[in-house]
Length: 384
Ligand SMILES: *Cc1c(COP(=O)(O)O)cnc(C)c1O
Image (cartoon, rainbow, N blue to C red; front, side, top):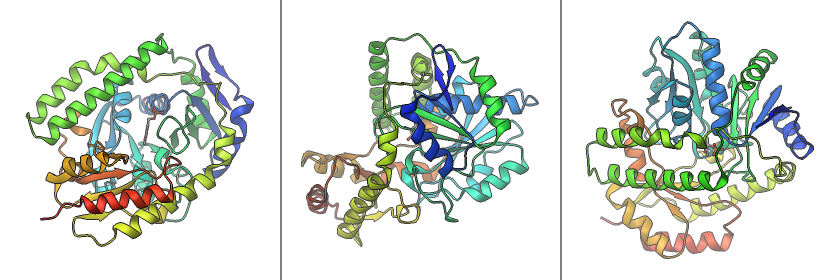
């Protein structure tokens, strides 16, 4: 119902309205705030958290160590210190106990991310957040349309829920959204949104900065993987240049895109992803070189199909070999705590980062592609 534009808040345009109606119905939301990026939505959520806890002078938010760095970058933009919760070593997901381990009296919010489409056990986290007066920010981007462990729609448990519809996401036509689940929250968010000013940055500059950020991230992940320098040096390097990228995070909604049509296609698109994942799982099952992440079966959403290599030393050579055969494969899904706060150690997230290899299941891949990709994977499987 709300669109964040450079000229202020406007009503949702028609080309978003069917998508909005479906989304609000699905996750029991009352109001949607559309902007150009989920990063902007996360920033709004942090502003809300600060507004709700005026008693805390140096606020902190607990975010999972395994995620893209956006939730931590936007926390700093909102003057909230990110603290990093470790993950379960097998699933890569944060749990109530890893989150509780980072609690301090300065904590004002918790971000839950359903990584790779896999559902976090959010019900106990929601209960704990309520008891401690913490805003629960749920990021459903990678689990759009999924089911949680209780069988409810993912996205219903947070005080606010965030989705990105930008490049590489399940719907990738553009924009992000923040959903409020009650009228008080919607009113607070509306009042806060009136004060957001979008940085003046040209498309060309944004592109340059985005590419630079990507290269920086890849370069630093390379150093961490090789253990080439002490982690603190990576933290220092990243934190020193991080402010240069701030213009990227706040972005008004792009009204030139149609969100209604991809929403109509969502069930078919999720079914395709599940089918591709099923093919990988069938061919790659019970192999001594890796474990498969199969929690997508429970949530019904697969964002990427992931292997956890048993030997972290093989992560680069194995994925480069499969890539050289012409397949999309990523080994850059890395824990973010070393970039921001080296002393929030997360041993499980570190090991998970060194083991994970991600494969594509979106519309760019077909049954035939997956079959050939599995041939390549099995051919290059690390052996001891
Ligand atoms: C990509 C991503 C974001 C950031 O989305 P933008 O729209 O690019 O700001 C946030 N959360 C998750 C889980 C993501 O995968």
